[in-house]
Image (tube, rainbow, N blue to C red; front, side):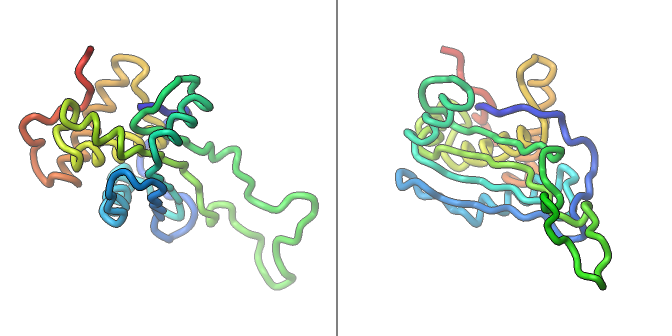
Length: 199
């Protein structure tokens, strides 16, 4: 599970006006059937549970094994496919107004408030074929595996990491809490594991 790290978004946040966060979900592979509406609802629940409020946007893209392998090598320098990659977008790098003298308002309009603009949180890219292959020895079944990858990927976008042991403990604990709250609606089933077995 990979990410491109950035500082963690902490605490309840309201960014981008009074609208609800939007999650865009896309299936760009044909190997495994994916219920886009289901994973969109889970993602929306995770953003809400993590205190994300206001006009924010997140994309979840399901892609083929060779496509995620290319991304894994291009962005992380790792050869071969992986299950999930997260690409956070740093809010400080976003442009909030047109450059080079572009018109931003008419004579009867107030200046645009940057807090009313949507914040692009980032993208989560998941490979259902890899999820299907590792599910029996990881989360237990494909449904739980995909749920774990959606939650894991979003937490990375929001700044969680597992590079250090203490970070790993915090992130895995939060994954389990979110899965119990939003996916199972109760305790984790027997046999659920959050990490792959060691070879």
